[in-house]
Length: 271
Image (cartoon, rainbow, N blue to C red):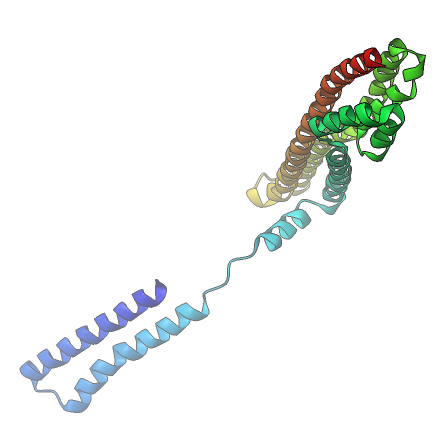
């Protein structure tokens, strides 16, 4: 767009120069050399202007450069702590997400295979199937099958007890994420208070309230708050995703346990 404007400007200058030279030739009968100078001067001036416009074009800073500059301007003391909280929170969140993903089981497929194995191979084959299957639901079924000889009441008690243990394993680590969510904004607000104190100290030392004196402390105050809130937002999204995964797995555990008990009741009647 700038090059187009520059070309149009050059064309305008040239047209204006040529028109002036022709008019001057008709009215004043100027020499050819003077006409040439009048035409060439605007073109030379416009060439210099175009070159200056092109050289003064500066590439916009990248997002990484802007983020780095704001991080440094916010003060490395609190910014580093907030960054550490983000890293730790993301590490725990990623570990929980991977664990919960691996704990997810296709319960319909597992129950179908378990029913077929019970009818064809009995309890021992069913134990092997549950032991070789990944996930807490298969573990609950295995614990129930281990106590099948003690009666169905003991099987039910075992399923309830082991289900509580597995639920606790699924929820472990979530409290740390909620702690990091709370610490991010708290540290950001602490940086805000410290930045305001620094601004008032600068005002007291200068004996004058001016934008230049206050700007440094105010910038630190605002940047720490912004970064703290960004950390909280990112970790809150991860936390809600993890809670949703846990809720889904627990619901599958409860539903499949009821179906599993019905299956054992039917099996016990046949045998």
